[in-house]
Image (tube, rainbow, N blue to C red; front, side, top):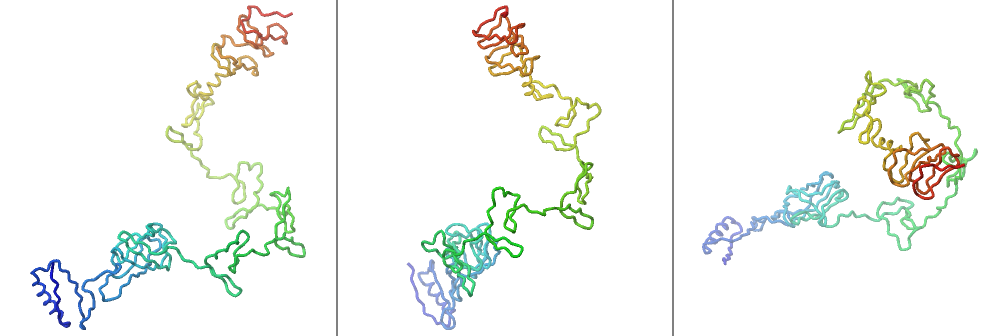
Length: 441
């Protein structure tokens, strides 16, 4: 362990004290390592003026020669997130404290930070949450911040403090502020009056308005109830009735000239020869000029086309050619079941399935026409199978003619050629017909 030596020296000879102190210290076992010496320099009267080694008080340097202040004013633009504050002697150390008055309210849309005495921008948080946006640091408000080694923590409350509003009197106006708390029981029908009291308004009953007459003005009030039929064409007259306004005649509009504006009004009546004309601002019907259009742009496999004029067909592009989407006049090909032509491939399929085809398989419910038969005659498949080689033949009555050696099902109806039209054969038992048709006398 080292030895502590106390030295008495004349208060008027600081240099003599320093020499004496060095001589005494050098004789302490020849070692002065690990010796810490804090020296207070005296003034001429033998009293200390300042600390030889400065210290920080809540982050502000102090040597005893002057007062310490932890206060600064910020006038940084409200939209700037980094707020600059000047405070002489401030150092950014853990526990450093600064009190700031803001001349400009914060409006920055990003998290704010403080740069005190050019020690660098440090984020500001309130209960560990960054401070963002307006109505946080208010104009002419003073806030205290303490540095915790990572960020400045706002000390106290962010909330703006409001006082209860002052009610108006007969002699003076009131002042804005917090609404007074309503007492228990002030529910539903009570309202805050300008005198600051929660009460039930008086004189809130309204009467119907009184219409005007030739000799007296009306008075305000409730609008009379419209009756059924008083629809959107009727309006409330000053005499209190719902009626259709009269005198709503409009004049024709006045066209503009080189020196005067036109006036709104009814469009002038166009004549029969004006059917392809347009109304000009001068009030005349005429054909517009400078209406040049460009040819349409054809579609490609990767881009849509654009509207425009149809390209002119060349000589020979007669009635057999049509304009396709790529801009060419061509003769459409005949449609098949797999490719489009004059019609789509699906339309071709539907058309081919419209008429009866021999030796073709049909499903229950499919319907076809028989070529050569009236259009109102339709065959519907009621039992799946394959048609014969000959299409059914119907007479004018709409019944198929009897066929020899043919399978018939229960309910099938046929007529016999040469027999009266009112005679109809109906199959009662499924089977095959004979080689000769029945004969009725």
